[in-house]
Image (cartoon, rainbow, N blue to C red; front, top):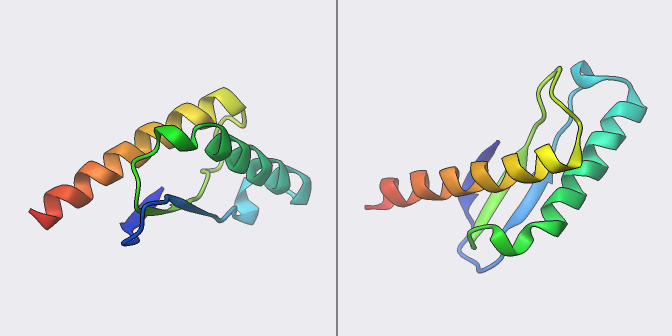
Length: 86
């Protein structure tokens, strides 16, 4: 996952799923799960980020795992960006 500041209050998400992950059915499932995980955990995300999510080949496509990793990675990216600003 990558991210940048967006000079706003909301965190936005972009999703890119490569053909290496699987066929169209698998890729669409990944997109649905990522969107749902983001929607359910949106209050826990730091504000003002644009995130790009790209699942890796062989990763686990389970909602609970996706939710946890989205939140932890978003917080890590936010801390990294704040360190660069200072």
